[in-house]
Image (spheres, rainbow, N blue to C red):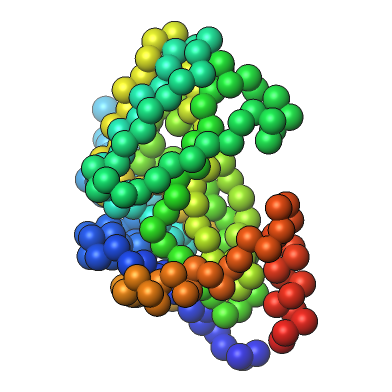
Amino acid sequence: MLFNKTIDIHFYTNMGYAHDFAGIKTDMDTKPKWFKNIKSSTCTDSNIPKKTLKACPGIQEYHRKVIQMPLWSDMSLQIGPKGSDWYKWQFSDGQSFIRDHPSEVINHYRKEEDFQQLLIECPWTVKCDQDVDFLLCQPLWHSFQLPTVSVTQGVLNFKHQSILNVQTYITRTNETQDILVKHGTPIAELVPLTEKKVKVHTHLLDNVEYEKLRSSTPYTKFTGSYYHNRKLTNKRL
């Protein structure tokens, strides 16, 4: 393990349609269609070559490394106007779920009348046998049509946790927002914080095996479960 140059990360689900039609994406598959269709350079009126965004090495390297999670079902959101506190959500699959946190979790830094926090429960459970951090971030190159939606960043370690959810904040506007996020739209990206090569594996499990896997990351405490479970895991090793 010490000399292993490849890190294996495993994504498990019990939803066949998520596994088959909205699988985890890597490398070239993470680029938006509009990006693939532009040329790497254009010519000015004086016939001088001018590079485009496609020639940016930072963007190219990002997509070579990023792990992308597409939305597995159409998701409809209704967000009440500024000054209200109501919202509605619905998934086309009839079983996916969203929950919220009150503004107390951010010490009322923003009022609930100004924004809506929504936590999207994802159908993937993730495991990695090496102690590697991953930065979860918003797929900005895919989010131009969702200007009021923000995905919060966080650092995750799938050796010590397995739950992967997406926390969003939606800014309220002067009018009610009807937001439709279509099936296949990337909703989160993971950037490995390592120089090693990362290989992604996806698995489809039956309900019994999947629930057994999810129970390996228990909520043992009202608060601080992650660090408490990490101590328990380290003692067991």
